[in-house]
Amino acid sequence: MADRLTDTIRGHGRPLVIPLMGFPGIQLNGSTLKQNTFNWGTQFSTVFALQRRFRPDGIFFFMDLSVEASALGLPVRFPLDESPSVESHLVRSAADLEDFSRVDVLADGRVMVYIETMRLMAHYIDGLNGAYVIGPFSLAGLLMGATEAAIATVTEPELLHEVLRFCSGVISRYARELERAGADMLAILEPSASFLSPEQFREFAGQYLTQIIETLSCVPILHVCGQTTYLLDAMVETGAQGLSLDSMVDLPEAAKRLPADVALIGNLDTVRVMIELTPNQVYRATRDLVATMAPYPNFVLSTACDLPAETPLENIHAMMDAGLGRPAGQPYNGV
Image (cartoon, rainbow, N blue to C red; front, side):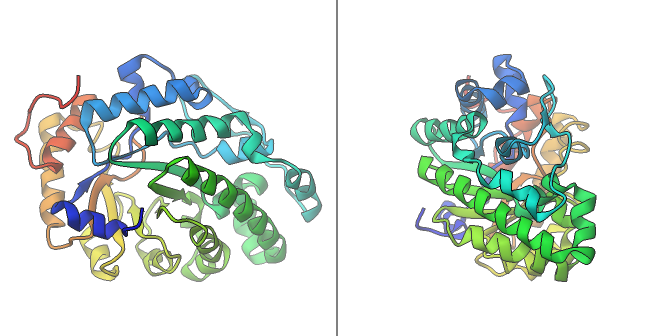
């Protein structure tokens, strides 16, 4: 994409509506989460079904924070209908990185699932197609252990930087392949960075995020979970064109601090709004958020994070109706 994300928003004359959804699609085709993480045909059919049903302005494939870690050989648990999770962490010293450095992550079967899914999305789905990669500090946390990586910012910064340099290289290679497969947007997921101070973020996350972002031509988006208001300036400094923010963040206050050419993406609560409310209540909550963000032309309506699999489809419908300015309860766009 040649345009910045904010240019695309302004070209629509309204906020883009791009819920972070993948998991709820298993309700449409009867698949399991595990099947979607191992089979590109299944995952594409799920994403395609979601796109046909709701017609968002953009859609991402499945969010999976274990892809790069499992490609490197870390032991990963794959429940039938829960997100995969890394079970143990193998890096304690720089020498431990040597085995990982010989691994070609692009030859991994699960990595290819996501690359092939993106290739199909780019070919068959109109609108903005998005991919995910993990962030370098979060991948370091999977290699070392999240607590150990956080402690290493103080006790072993040299080791942590070596691990981060390795992680940045792995992620950049995967990200460029997703871009070549047709990704219009690439969201870098950096949940572990919410534990860092702004200074630590710049040193142990920001500079490596920038290195990844500088290799990309598609739209780079940064997602950090939690209350990240205190990190906004450091997040902007990475060069991301969009910041995807959690429901804990006050979006209008955040918008006042962001440059006009950085998109603000969010932030309907994935549980308290999208699961626990009725469709009419979701509609009102969405309209309230859209009205509150009306003064900010860099706003993208989305969810605070990836929607859980059990999210009622009627609530996604209500969010889409409200975001697109339709009366509540309109028929589905798709089938």
